[in-house]
Length: 126
Image 1: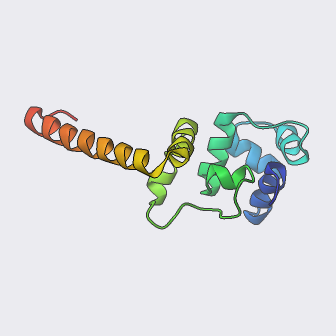
Image 2: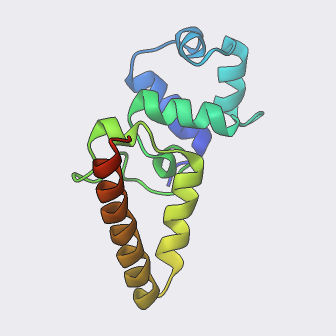
């Protein structure tokens, strides 16, 4: 699998962007993009999230943890752009749980969703 610096360069080149143009999108200097691509410097979490959102790829892909660039077909792009670092960490924690504990989490989330729907519906809250 590619490294994060290789992914950043490939994504930028595939998007036909110069380092200057990507820097302008992310609010950093051309020199900073060059450092990301050579591995002399690593982007902070906010920049990684902004890159993943801009290129519409998952954080795992950007960071070289998978060769699958996007989200699965059940994840609409509008949701994918709202994924945060804590959400990604939570998802990985969930995957590390046993199957029985994953079912408990699923049940709990479903219960909270139903409770919130009823509560918000009766009180007109959002």
